[in-house]
Length: 373
Image 1 (cartoon, one colour):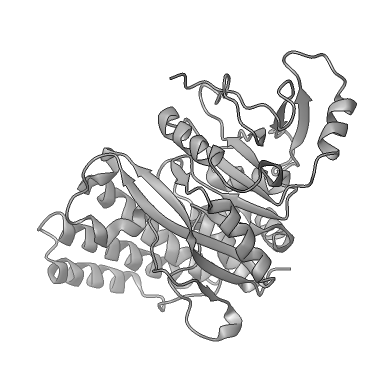
Image 2 (cartoon, one colour; image 1 turned 90 degrees about the vertical axis):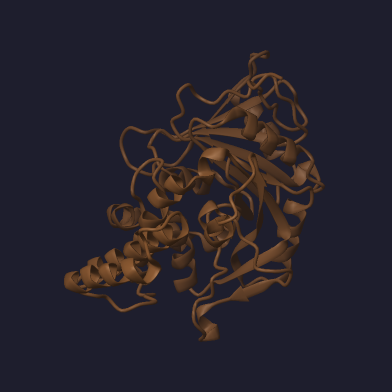
C-alpha cells in the first residue's frame, strides 16, 4: 500500500488546495490561501469562485501532525472516509507542522474537501492557532494523527452542538486500539495516553454551575469547538504567547498542556464544556508508549504543567507550597508510595512530585491571565 497519497478537492478531482502560513514577519500571521492545480492551468480567481459556490460546511476536521507515522495516519484518513455525515457538510484541514520530509498525500482520493496547511513554527500551540485562523466552518474539531474516528463521529458532534447553543467545547469518548498487549498496570495511567471514558451519559459543566471543575473537561484529542466562541482565545493567545509556552509547554515531543489552556480560556469566558460519549475515537497506541520508562518521563511533566496552567488562569485546585514543602512532600511521598518498587509505585511517586513542583513554582507567582475579552 502506498503511503504517499493526495486528496482532491470535493467535486473536482483536478483541483488541489494548499494553505501556507507565512512564517516570516509577525507571529500568528493569517494563513495564506494558495490554490493550485497539478493538471489544469486555471486562474486563481476561477478556483476561488468554485470554492465560494460550494455549500458551506458545518464542521472542519483539523489534524495537526509532525513527521507522522504514515500507516497510522492512513488509518485515520480511512476512518474519515467512512464518516456517515454527508461529505459536502465537512472538510479536512491537514496541518503539517514542519515535517521532514513534508507530508505528502499524493495518490489518495476522497469524497470530501481537503486543505493542507503548512505551519513552520513547531509545537501544537502554533499548529492549532493556524487551524483556528484557517477554519471557516461553524465547528472545528481537532483529532490526532493516530486517532481513528468511529463512522458517526462527526454526525454526533454536529448534533450535540446544535442541541445546546451554550456549548463551546466538547470532548469525545476515546478508547484504546493497542498495537501490542497492554501491561496489567496500565489502566491507572491510561489518562496520560489521551484515553477518556467517563461512562455512557453525556456530561456538561460551566463556571455558572458553581461546582468544582470536573475531570471531563476536554483535552486536545477530539477537541470540538464552536467557532464563534474562539475570538477570546485568539486574543488571549496573541497577547500571552510567551507566558502560555512557559507554563503549558515543555518542548517538542515532551508533552504539553496548551489544549487545557485553550479550554480554560473558553470556560473563563463563560462557555459550557461537555463530554459526548456517543462520539468515539479509537486511539492507536504503539508498543513504545506502553513501557514504564515512557510514563516515568511523561507524567511528572504533565502534572507540573497542569498546576502551572491552572494557577495562571486562577483555577487552582491546590494552594501553593514552599520549596521546602515541595522537598518534604516528595520525601514523604517516596515512602508513602514505596517508590523503590516498580513500575506502579514509582510512577505514582513521580507524578506526585510533578504536582509538588508545580505548586512550589506557583508560590509567589502573582501572574494571572487577564479575563478573556
